[in-house]
Length: 124
Image (tube, rainbow, N blue to C red; front, side):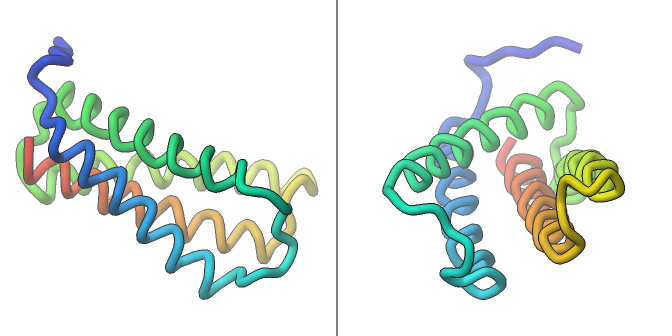
């Protein structure tokens, strides 16, 4: 397994970051709305950074696993979404996250990472 950062599709990374932001805006506005949101613009700046970092890491993992199709990329992204969901499950079991927030978070991560994986698999 070798990772060649110069071989990454930077257009796909850009599209993935934008996809993550659009998806997050829609998903969280529908499921969470304005309830329990912190004040200030910093959360939006950090969300943009997280979107692009996530797209970069998915691109690296898709390349490293030689997943060069929509379905193979989606499988890589889906596995990451499942892994994150398992961590949220553990945190929920220990009372760190309530059940509603658990369901919102795992839905978000399962969907967006599968989409990002599919995008990068398609455009690798």
